[in-house]
Image (cartoon, helix red, strand yellow):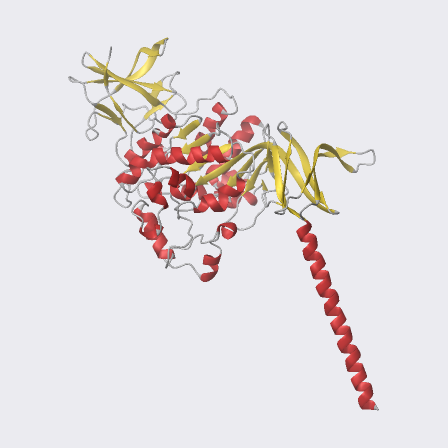
Length: 541
C-alpha cells in the first residue's frame, strides 16, 4: 500500500514538474514572439540626435502585414498638477513588408533643444525612445589619432570641468579585435568579425564627465566647439579604427567600379600588392587566412557605414592617413582615393553636397618612425580640397611630435576642424583655415607667393624671421612678408600681404615645409599655420 502511495506521489510530482516546464516554455515563446512583433534599428536609442532640416527616416523589423505607427512627440510640457505631458509633433502609419522590414519618413523639422520622444506601436507593443533632440549628426571616421580617447588627451583634467554638455551626444561603439596586436585573433574574436557583429551593441549617451572619457577626443572638441558657438544639438557617431587604412571605409563595389582602384578589391587581400604593406603585415599578425579584418578593404564600410545609409546626417569628419603614407605609390593615389570614398558616401547617403572635413597629418621625424614621405603625403591631402567641393582641411603640423605618431593635444585639432564647419555650414564669420597657397609668380628677380585665408595679413608664429621656404625642396631660402597688389579673378586687392623671395632665375617650383618634421612658421592673423605645399611657379604677366 505504501509502495502504491509513493508511486502516486512521484507521478503527481512528475506531472507538476512537466506542467511547470510547459508553462515556462510557453512563456518564453510568448516573450520571444513579442520581441519579434516590432523592433527598431539599433541606431535609435534614448538620448539620440535626429538630423534637422531633412526628412526623418526611421526603420525596423516587424510581423509581415502588421500596422506600425510611429509618432514624434515634444516632451517637457507640464500640466496643472505638474505631471509631464507630451504633444505629438508628427505621426505616420505604415505596414510591415513581406520581408519583415518597415520604414517611415517623418517631415523635416528645425533644430530643437527641447526633448522629444519617438513612440513606435505595433500589435499592442510599444517602443519608447526618449530625450531625443533635433540637430546635426556628424559621422567620425579615421584611425588611431581619431580614435584617441579623451581620458588620454593632454587637456583631459581641464576638460572634465566642462564635460556636461546636454546638447552634445555620442554614439561610440567598440569593435572586435580592438587592441589585439602581434598575435592571432582568438576564435571568439574571429566570430565577431562578421560585419553585423563587428561593432558591439551600444546606445547614445549625453556628454558628461563619465561618458566623454572613452569618446574620440578630436570628435569631442569638434562637437563641443559647434555646440558652444551655435547652440545646435550635435550627435557624433564614432566609427574610427586604430591603424585602419582608407580602403576599409570604401565599399568594395566602389573600388571595383574605378579602374584605378579595382585591384584593391582582389582577394586574398593579405597578399594583394595594391594594399599598404604595413596594413598587410598587421593583418597577417592577426589572421591565418584572409578572412574579415578591420583593415580589409570595405570591412568598416559594410559593418558601420552601410547600415547608416538610410539615416539623414549632416556630414563626415576624418583623421586618417598614417597607414597610407609609407610607400610612394600609396601616397600618390591618396587624394584620388579619398575623392572616390567621399563620392561613394554622397551617393549612398543621397546627399551630393555632404560636407567632408579632415585633418592633415602632423609633423614627425623619420629616425624612429617611417615618416620619410609625410611632407609629400600632407601635400597630397591638400590637393583633396581641389578635387572635392564642400571639403576642408585642418592643418596641425605645428603640434606634431618628433618621435611619436600620436600627439596628445587633440583640443587644437578638433577646434581647428570645427572652424571649417562653423564657417561653411553654420554661417559664422570665422576664418576656417591657415594660409593656403593661391599662386606663385616670378618677375624681375622676385618670386611672389599669394595665399587664401590671409585677408587680415600674414605673420610668423614666433615673431622670428620667416622659415620653411625652398626652391628645390632641400635647401631653405630667405623669404619675407611684404605688402603688394593681389588680383583674384576680376577683383584687385591693394595692400595684400604675400611672401616674397629674391632669386636671379625663375624656379620651377616653390616648396614650403618640405620635410617630415617641419619648423615653418608662417601663419595668418588667427595664428593658424600654413599647409605644407609644392606648387608650380609661373611667369608674372
